[in-house]
Structure formats: structure tokens, C-alpha cells
Length: 148
Image 1 (cartoon, rainbow, N blue to C red):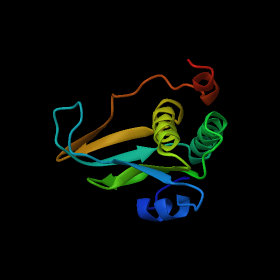
Image 2 (cartoon, rainbow, N blue to C red):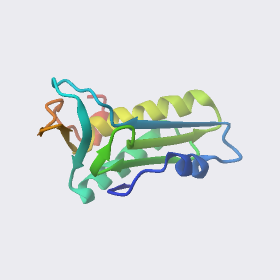
Image 3 (tube, helix red, strand yellow):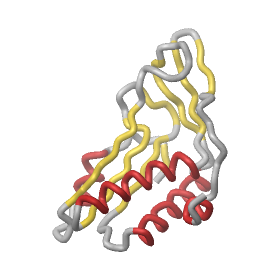
Image 4 (cartoon, helix red, strand yellow):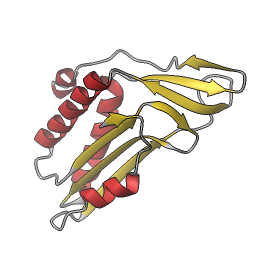
């Protein structure tokens, strides 16, 4: 899910908790006050094509399921619009019968989202703002699946 509503990590964790799963890993990427710029960040703003981003997120989830078929639940939610300090910009929840798969799949999902989902981030500080220069070349999910 990609949208402008505040993210709810606790609700996603409850949703992902299953009787057959002994591990639930919740990752929250939150807005922080520092970046590679010299400014103290006050907020972030994310922008994307929601349709394209959601399609890529579905591909990431599908690839994670193919790598870890024992997973119970996977949720990847990313916020667009204004995100204030300490608010989550991205939440990933993975449940699995055992912790190793849940940790590995969660790490895979956040890393792949960062590499494959088109998302632009504006850093906002007192008196100004700029689009982040921490960008990298966008890969297709198929490229990640092929080990590129």
C-alpha cells in the first residue's frame, strides 16, 4: 500500500500475527532530523506515481514469497506526502514460523523497496527544502531477483 494516510505499525503487526507463526518482524523507517545535507531536517515529503509504486511493491512481496515460501504474512506500506519527524515513512511486517526467515525476508523487502520502488524524497528545513541527493539507479524487481 502506498498512500498519504499515517502508517499504523501496531495494526499491521496485529494483522501479521498468525497462530502458525512464532516470529513477527516489524520494520519502521521513520523521518529523522539529519541527512547528508548540512541542514537540520524538520520534515520529509515523499512523491511517486502511486500506481507504479504499488505495482513494484506487489512484485517485491511476490519475490519475497518465492524466496521464503514458509512466510505467513507480508505487508509493505509506504507513505507519500508530508512525513513529520519520528513518523514512519515506511513499514514492513513479515511473519514466519521461525525468526530467521522473518528477519531475512524483512531485510530483503526494505532493501528491495529502496532499490526498486520509485520514490522521491524532499528534505524540509527551516527556510528551505531540496530533493534528496541520496538517489541511486532504480532497478527492476526482476533484476534483483536475478541477483543484480
